[in-house]
Amino acid sequence: MKLLEDLERNCRNIVPCSAIIALLLWSTGMHSVIIMRGITGSGKSTFVAKNFPGATVVSADHFFEQAGGYAFDGTRLEDAHRACFKAFMDAIMRGDETIVVDNTNVESWEIAPYVAVAHAFSYQPEVITLLCEPGVAAARGTHGVDAKKVAIRAGLLAKERLPRSWKQRVVQTG
Image 1 (cartoon, helix red, strand yellow):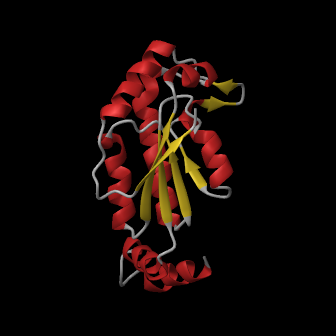
Image 2: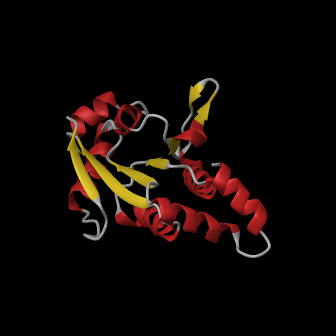
């Protein structure tokens, strides 16, 4: 984004960089934030890989990925989500064209900060909910979440109603 770099360098002392980025994105209208929503094992990461190649993907899971594989630590979940949101903000500030938030995002309070920031920086947010039978999701999940916890989260997902003003899409995966 040469134009963005030039604007930032030349206007730094006049207009805050965030305002420059928002203005540039607003003028193109082509930047989007995709917020994935679904229980563990519903196929969110697979869906993202198939449908958004080349997108910037942020996820709390990235915090737990190590050279030896995935090492989840429930006591660090807050740190993982903080790191995910920071990576999201970094992508926004770079002006990345498509940003995908790949977390479970079962409840609206988990999604709301991403939607608010997307709107503030003239991105078009869309929430994509993947529906999957809890037993199927638990069997194919890669994070070791037991079937009972997956079923509880599926119940929350089914009950939670997102604001109608949010652009939403629902996809059945299994």
